[in-house]
Image 1: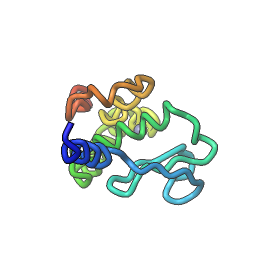
Image 2: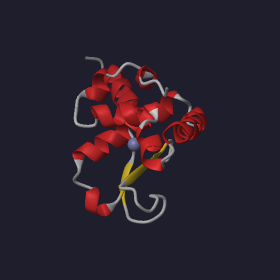
Image 3: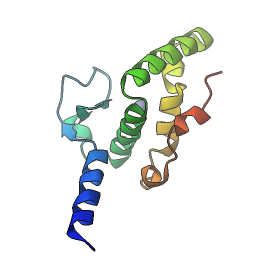
Length: 128
Ligand SMILES: [Zn+2]
């Protein structure tokens, strides 16, 4: 194979990957194991650094944020959380039923999910 093609494929692959950092404290909110902040990276608490399921969960969020151009992810995430909060009247259910979370929770154990995932697949989970 042509070296230019190999380099281009490698570069494209690297662009797809999230930078994962393992640290405690900011920016991971208290009470959470990790957070994804596209385009900066995925932040996982130190004690969860070997948890492949959590890392896969956050990588799914990375793809969601990327395809929603980041800003629309946060707008939709917040709007769907508020709608769910009215519907369920508690934080835990409102959070778990956000379509972005439902997709990530449903597929976090499937380590090959991201390789086959259709774009905007979170749309399959409706909020009401
Ligand atoms: Zn999540």
